[in-house]
Image 1 (tube, rainbow, N blue to C red):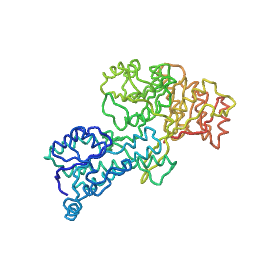
Image 2: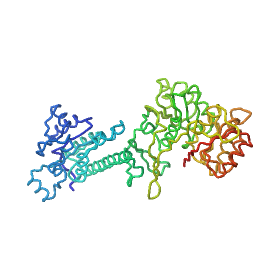
Image 3: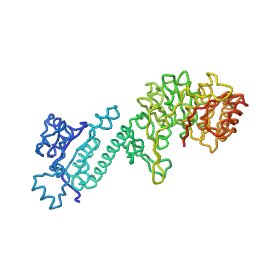
Image 4: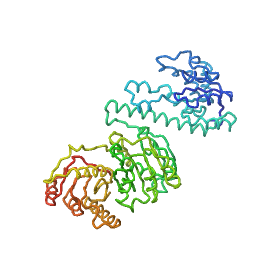
Length: 529
């Protein structure tokens, strides 16, 4: 492979026409001959550029609605021929094949078509064939050919040509080739995963995973770990699609915690009122609803003021000035919301390090998506936990039934428990968490931790009794013994929601009856490991 290779002839065939004219003009000004197809050729020609149609090179017109246009030896020979191989050069001479030094291709918008809800046939027609074939050919022959698949690489290409008197370096072509193979790999992954879903194949023999770089992170979970952030192409609203208005660059832990916060607050429909979630280390330290956003924030903050320091705040409604003022009273790492008023933005602007992320909406908490977890030598893939239980599906199993007010708090607690690391116990009162026990090895320990937090916060607030007094209690999985339930009752819990399903369910029910508390079964658990 030679280092410097000149760009004399370029084939341009793009679906996304962004920057096309400027690129064509820049290449033409450098004396590069332009070949093109269909709409790309028309756009370049309409801009006054001299362009040769690929159909004139191959001797065949575009046919079959554009399905066949570049699949021809005069195209692929021009891309694949080794310039230093005498036999290859002789074959080119014999068959009238001219070399192609630069390929610029971006693919049919398959991912966008799927995201827009295209039907099966429309999605099929947006699967590119000729594009990936040319990209792979050019990338394989990167010793002689440069291949560009992303609009954002146009400027880099022109800079490279200027720096090397119209040539590209081998190192540059290698980098472009890697990007090209990653693009076709991601494209094929999108097609295969869509098709698996379309035909109802839940566990395909092979599952492809792909992503597009959002940012290179300073480090990962710890400073000795390298990390980067990628989008998955799903378009799901959240931290990956949010616009950062201000603040320092997000860290790995910021991104992880912000995602946890926004997914949790999305459980609460903004049409039903404001909701706020405060997250620390991927666990909620306070969640609440209120008549106003600032009221919801204050109630969430009062669950665990200590842990809220340096936390992540997620809102289900646009940030307003009053709430912005309240949030800035303590150190907060990140705030994410589906919008913000100009007044709120101005208030945050005084806190240069406070990161503000805005989205176009909330993630759909009921939309199934895939969740991935890497293990040694493999990968676990499952549906994201989008399970929910309707009020009419709850089963009262005790002699005492919950009141309407208790039932509202039970359902609130159940939504929160879904987002707490197992084993999870959540105490809720009046639409706000008052104690959260997360990630303990036993459910009894989680009940103790949550109760202790509720007691400490009551003392900090100057109250005579624990915040857990009169609360509703949620457990993400069944109580294997009655001890955890009795601990919750001793802390002040008056009603409990849990999945049920233990061989000792009756023992737990009897304990609840003896304690005089109401209990409902959901029939669904929410492990979160």
